[in-house]
Length: 462
Image 1 (cartoon, rainbow, N blue to C red):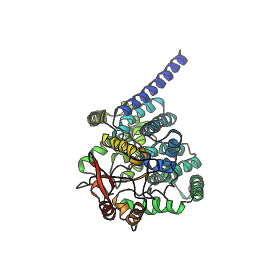
Image 2 (image 1 turned 135 degrees about the vertical axis):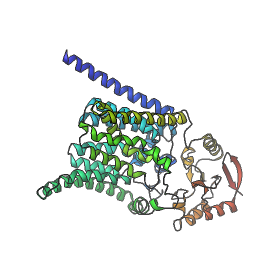
Image 3 (image 1 turned 180 degrees about the horizontal axis):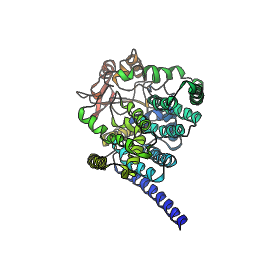
Image 4 (image 1 turned 45 degrees about the horizontal axis):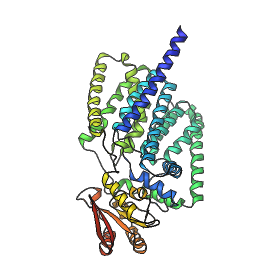
């Protein structure tokens, strides 16, 4: 009878896991999807033979773009392909979270963690592919490997995380704490031995990556855009720094207020260290404050929430009351978010963009080039056209103000003379208000407005 009960329990938990995954997919399909233009344009240009960093200014490390390039090369470029990839990545993170927690704790805590993670993942603008989203499952794997003391593979996966986004550097904080915890003079040799394994794994992955980049011929450009510019210039660039208001700060951190309760749960296993993993995942939100930058922290926050919810009986009445208040406040916060985002059209793929794409397709021939200014750069990929300037530089002030960038772009479009120019109307504030003077002057002197589609102009040569 005991064996039969255990078997039924396993079936029930597997059934719940499937239900949770299906529920997550249902929510992802029902809520607004963010189709970040870069996630379409950059891999699309690579499939057309443009080299990353050399022909495309990219301030991020390349691993995610490699994945997307392979995807688009096999299945073509489109919104559906991007959505499917994004949702499969999210389901992978769900499954990894369940498996990791089950292996370290138990299935009950694993299910509670997953139930906690699903609404968090969506609330923190997770229904859209960006580098932070891709960092989350890799961070979970590193956490598990460190727990299991498999330091070589932990080093390899940390290198892969860094090659996904540079903010993976923050995960060295909890990793370092693991290595130096309880350190004494007698244990220095052991510290060297364990850290050496981690460093060996990381270096081996980096060396292979650098050799591949060198062989492809853009190592110098990779260093410039991903590190000298991406790390040294971009974080402090005017317009890039975006600190939250007090209200945004309160909303962003309210779900994290459950973390102190893990210190009152017996089965937490090193609550301080879990808190540091959460902190490391948060640090990528600085200095440009956006909710989606919290994604790497969410699996660890979900583990904290799962531990508390699964073992509520261990809490004293005062802390139980705090937990009830927390659940009510978070439920209200999440409900407002879901009501606002339910059934909304895709971000960056509005009806105006679809009209522009249709217009370009109807008014260009194969090999015609266009130029997009102050509009979503995914227009190139969606209309199957190429930019008139190479390398492609984002229309953002921190790129356009670099020495010689505008002069090079004007020189290119003067030679190529693009068939069409798509130009968004300049706003009074925000990123859409920036007007690159040299490019704008050239366009006004050589092109005229042919069509107006919403807040966008279609220009043709005079």
